[in-house]
Amino acid sequence: MQFSIWIYIALIITLFIIMSAESWKSDKVDLSNKNLENVDFFKTYQHDIEVHTVRELNLSGNSLNSFLDCATSLNNLEVLDLSRNRLDRFFFLCRNESYDLRFLNVSHNKLEYIDENALNHRTGKLKVLDISWNLLSGINDTVLQHMKVLEFVSFASNPIGDNIEELVFENLTTLTHLDLKNISATFISPKLFENLINLEYLDLSLNPIEAIPSLPYDKLEVLDLSQTNLVNLGNLKLPNLRELKLNNMPNLTIVILSDFEKLPNLEVLSMKECKRLTQLRIRPQNPNLLFHLRFLYIQNCAIETLSSELQSIIQRTAVFEFQNNPWHCDCRMKWITVVNTTHNLSNTTKCNSPASVHNKVFSEIPPTELQCQVEGYSFSPILWVCVTSASLGLVVVGSILMFKESLTHWIIRRRRISGDSVSYTNVIESSNDLVKILTESDVQDRFDECIKP
Image 1 (cartoon, rainbow, N blue to C red):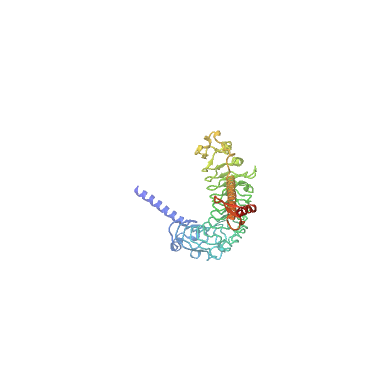
Image 2 (tube, rainbow, N blue to C red):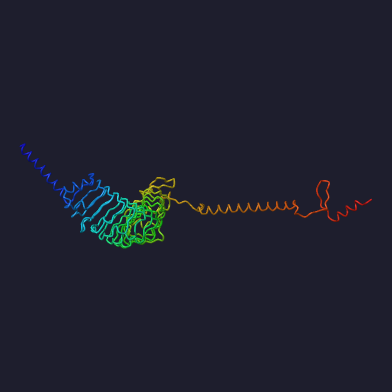
């Protein structure tokens, strides 16, 4: 009995060893996160796994500092993952014909530039290329010149800045997904996207751009402009756009939804974490504006009220998320109760002001308390400035007039005292020490008095 058990155990162990050996020869090999260095893979592992038979090879999370096809055999390789290593270079040099490589991931490495011998005609069958999270300081026109069937490319999180040559994407007519997130670009050439006639997804987020560049018109469906320095969102004409992301926009204060009238198929509009966004408006009213919008997100912004002009749009949306805004609950917000049956807005809206309803749920506030302040006796800031300026003007003018009168009296007095006034020689001194001016007849009378005997 015990002998049978031991035989059974031996068979299981043998089967396990055979299956393990077969797994090494599989067309998918995962050598990720094994801390492999160049010598470990090229001199040991690739021979054990018979790398020439492998279709998918994962070397992610190791310590490779370079990858050279001359040191290996990649005859059947279609997928190569070299991400999260220490690569400062990679080359495909040593084969006359092209590889069957379809997927190449070299993200999260230390690449400072892409050599002309890296992405050459031997890699012309690539469909997916990920070079994100490296140290690239520029992209020249020749980097992607051999990529005739490329569909996905990411240069995200490289310190590229404005050093993108305008013809770098000239041959990528098959490209559908382009990620330029966080590349420190302040300006994007109008010609950069000119030939991307099949582009469906474009990510320009986390770049300090101040103007929307010329975008591919025909097929773009998803556009991410989050955390850019845009102020004005007008002039967007993208008939097939389905999703627009405007999250974390530091300079966005007012969004005029009428600016999106040339986005007739927009389904998702996201404006989360826009800390200075205070208003959503429509000018003028358009019943067909954003007719297909189904998801609207404005959480964690600075919006205090929603005008009733937005009612038709919000009623059409399936999901409307607007939490954590400083809502001012007054008569302008009464219309929310009308759409309560479909969105339950009043049950999820907490008021921030006025003080009498602070932190109360909107649905718990009696309609009689939703009053707007009478503005008849309140002055707008501009009116206050005008009144203040006029008052100061009157004070200044009055002061000048008073000063002018005093100055006039002072000048006359000075003229009387100074030698510039009329000189009188015929004077006598009275008993009370006052000076009396004598006329000619008075002088004659006094003279007669003096010569009388």
